[in-house]
Length: 327
Image (cartoon, rainbow, N blue to C red; front, side, top):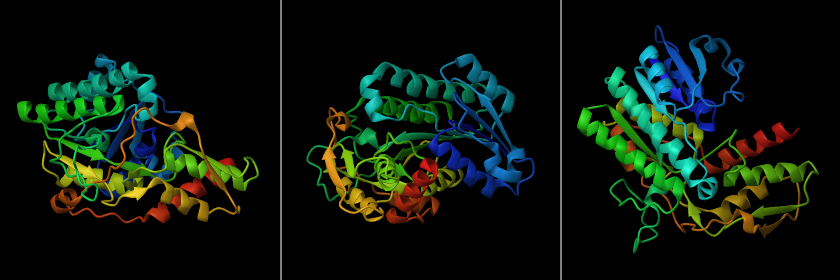
């Protein structure tokens, strides 16, 4: 089994690699090729004896010739396309770069697979941001895969384009492409540009006496669906091995959580008393969808997947990561 992971140096890529080396380690000739534009944060030593099955290569996925060369040379059986510009806030500031990386890079992957290994199963990691906020939708109703796509930020628009490309290539060329519409991932190792990790980092700094007891936050009145990254990568594995090609799957907890409630849990885990919360206008988005949470019943039914990590456990581990990192 030869597995190609794009974006292996990122938050999800590292957790997916950890999951795959456990699940695939007993297969003969098991091999992972991880590509990323920046591999500085990826440490092979973290994978112990399994590191012998992992190779790394620096690749810019917008370089069509380089992408084709990698796919032709490696001939993967499975390809997990995780690489992306994944920050909504950054996408407002840099919409052209977001579109270039997410759409052109993704299409290069599809074209490379079509040309050199059309039997390769491809997991395209897309996003629940594509759904936007559906007009007249009952907020108590979770979003399922049949809901209309209505992207409301540049990142979501770019991922919607890749989602459509993926389903069209599956139909037009018979490629075994699978699409995840992933809701908010959280867990240890996530960048502080994302809300749960940002809060956890601030609390770690407060507990170390390196920040005053004030959490600076954006809009904490909206609701999101938070899933531990370790459950998310398990879902990716189940989708590519058990899902139906050409179809999209919500990867989510199936529960909505108010951002203020998530923050309350993290504050309760702090060693510091009387932490205040203040609004930081720089963290507010131009458009911020009020409620996004998903229905994961299709994923469960088609693949047998189920989540293992509670929200509190995810937050505990995220806070622990930041306390260890800060020292």
